[in-house]
Amino acid sequence: MIKNKFLLTALLAGSFYMAHAQNAKPEDTEVWEPVPVKVTPGVTDFKSAPSDAVILFDGKNLDQWVMTEDRNKAANWFVKDNILTVNKASGNIETKKAFNNYQLHIEWRIPANISGTGQGRGNSGLFLASIGKGDAGYELQIVDSYDNKTYVNGMAGSIYKQFIPLANPARKPGEWQSYDVVWTAPVFNEDGSVKSPARVTVFFNGVLVQNNTTLLGPTQYIGKPSYSVKHGASPIKLQAHGDKSEPISFRNIWVREIQ
Image 1 (cartoon, one colour):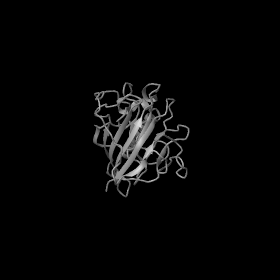
Image 2: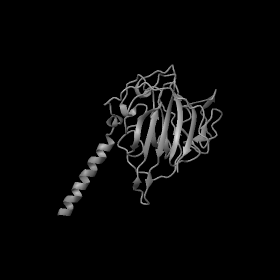
Image 3: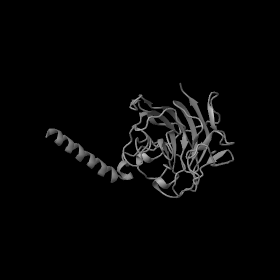
Image 4: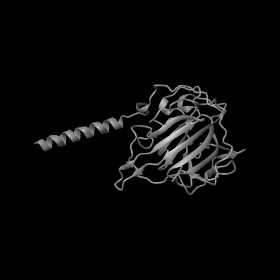
């Protein structure tokens, strides 16, 4: 009789969870407060990479990149005047090489003539580890956050839908911005359980916005993140977001592997 009660309780709990999951919405995991304080960033100038860096984009070609949906295809975003611009019609791109722990530098620019509001205003994403097709992986958000209201765990400098940035040092659309990232990849046990979770430190335009933050798992647009996929070294991915706003651009991308 007791066993039957336990079984009934488990079945009811499972049914409740499934019903809740089916009714989940993206808005459920949006956080709007507290709003990070605005900070005017200082001058940052990274014209050259360190001698031991792997140059991921030097302004000339996309030899270090492939299409996420088909890694046998060369990346076909637009390269002109030493600048890489998103090709929204083609999809996400990611590095040919996979990385564990690293230091990354990347510069990005929201178009000066940007339109739209909220998440539809210059949206892209830097996936610190791509663990599958589409938008699977761990996302550091890229979006116009200079004077653009959105949920704060979805603004520039946030670990998307997980952690709010410590400050908002965003520059105006049309100006170049930078991320400097220290990424510590997650480590898994043989059974797939987490031995040590992913951690990340992020400087946004030279201002600390994520301080050795421990991630809850890969990014989830709907629902709570968790470490449900065991993986090793992974590519770095750039997102071709499907909004209707003008595409953003990148330049000067390099990475240093950390042992």
